[in-house]
Image 1 (cartoon, rainbow, N blue to C red):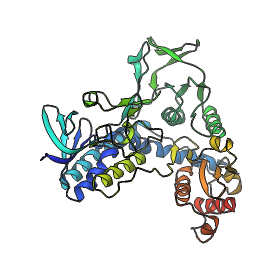
Image 2 (image 1 turned 60 degrees about the vertical axis):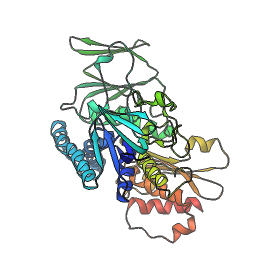
Image 3 (image 1 turned 30 degrees about the vertical axis):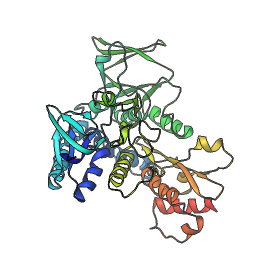
Image 4 (image 1 turned 45 degrees about the vertical axis):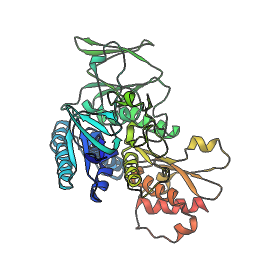
Length: 448
């Protein structure tokens, strides 16, 4: 049977466009369906915007550590000017991607994509067909079903704020709240974080999280744990947030960061018998849905591994290789690092400290990195590394606290995936002085 395309992708984010580019390069006829801004959440109103807005605060936080070394300054972030720059820079990315698609002869079909049958997709009022279809529709912010939910904002709203509110309240103490609250506090806002659980960042090493919470508290952030928001109501002075436990807060802005949910509605999944649940679309170990020629990729998948941009890109590359017959094996994920953009940063990869403590097969090595190598960590005394080593003297997990954690975790991830030994590390020379050269020596000693 002849189809309009070899592959149709629903969604234009990282979960899809990597595969689209690869397939197009080898001569496949490809289309991408997109109802929103081209290139998806991360590129337009997620990761990229957050990185751009966060970077100035990183410099200021780093400079503050040098006050004890005689460096003083009155550097401040002008949020309105920073946001104006963000609004001039980020919107340029979608047209660049569209230009790349056009150059590669990838058809970009703007409209709402929905499955009609195993090989047909409707795009608003039109229909197109393909041998394969890939669903990469991602996730969206969840919204608390409470009285006053119309006053709640999400991460996309925050990353577009022209003026930082004088009083801001975050619901949830996960990654989004902790990262955004860090910026708001450094701008002088009155910041409150309300969390249903008894701690922040539940997936990360507890003592590292306590260090971050302590620093944020010292900078003026108010944490309210074991509290469930029940009502948000408008008042003459702004908004009032009330919890089931009786806490009342007066604020100007409320951000609901209680999670994200997969975009599975109105995709035609029910009509085709494609299984899904509240976590996303169910796939097998080849990322195929219950309809074998229809795949799912990225955050919309029902999975337990980290939902991150690099993970989505990895899955996209896998699907392209599978369609081309280059890899028919089940997908095998490498160690996946992740990073929280608080100050200091928290990063982790592989076997967690909590897992290691429950298994005698692992050895935990604590390295007070900031105390041992102050000049390499830029006077960051609290910088710390925890390594997890197995019985074969291989690095299998790591957790880091410190503002260099992002680059350091990438090096450690490489060591984990390549099963690098102490002997192999002894045969390497890194540039000195540098944070990673100090890390190299520390890991080498730990593996011996």
